Length: 482
Image (cartoon, rainbow, N blue to C red):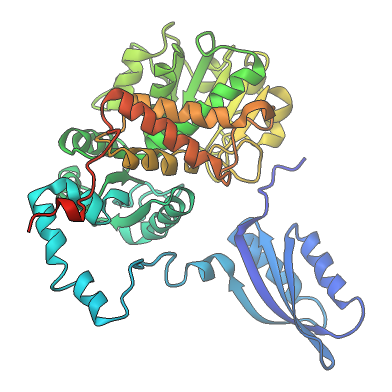
């Protein structure tokens, strides 16, 4: 099977065409598109009158270059005229993806006097007397700030706060759609950890939780750790812990499929940035002791010069019990698990074949994984990626909406290791009796996921004493003082 990226709606376009109104004319277009390895998704009939008919053809490709090639092929067809080409993804983002909308009526003077002056002064006084009432009388209790500096956006790197905004808006949509949590994108024009910490602390009174996003390592570790220490609301860096939670859930089920135990396996983590380090720490906390971290210079061991890199120091102090050294290919021999959060195409098929029988491959580099499933699947027990066009997609959206829903519902003051482990187990359990080689993780669109994760997180938070069973009740008429 060719090692070619799959077509996706992310590279979709709409082409408005004039074509001869004779039998078979559209078949020529369909064949040309197929020969160009693109996919026709939808065909809209715009007009059938006269010597020409009009069609709007929705076509999915695999890259911008592929889109251009498909347009060229269609334009070369005799008698076919291209009227307009619309990029579906760019069109979707015009004017952004979200809005602020009130849910209280504002249609009369009475409504206005309650919602704003003079009535709004009354809840202000209640909150001034008891700050906890901000959770009941404002949006605070259901609102999360998504904070980024735009330095580590998806696979794009340091693109700046303005360019990061579409991703943050998308995150807001996922929070709302899957868990009913309101989220606000905050893209900051500074890379200074001190400034970011200061800014978030100033903003904290407005929000029930803070979701840090797309901040480059190693600054992300310092920023999160400081905010966790200095704030009394949950602080969560999704690139680290969201990835780790879902990856651990996938590992739990992959181990069931391959009939292995987490305490017995050898694992290699390739890519020691924020996600790789967080995954390794969660694996370690879950009982995986024989774990080796590998970066571009090789395995981290007792002789590695870690400098001031906190991730490298953690790997040096907590992993590689046999003090192995060498390249990725060398330390992967006899391993049961490869976790890649690194770069495309770096895992060779020979290295895969050197792993233990029924090995587990989590190749999570996006959009192109460390090894394509077409190449590796026949040699391993379980294959997973971060992509939606292959089975076993390891996707953060399985974790963060439900995790914050549960934390907000019990007014948790922090996100603990126990809460993250509970979330991972809840995600794994959803698969249940349907567990199979190509189904180790539930679909991101499964509506049960966020609900079950929220309940597990809420229960764990209360058990650990960082959440409340009965948060401060809202004031009632009988309790107001006149």
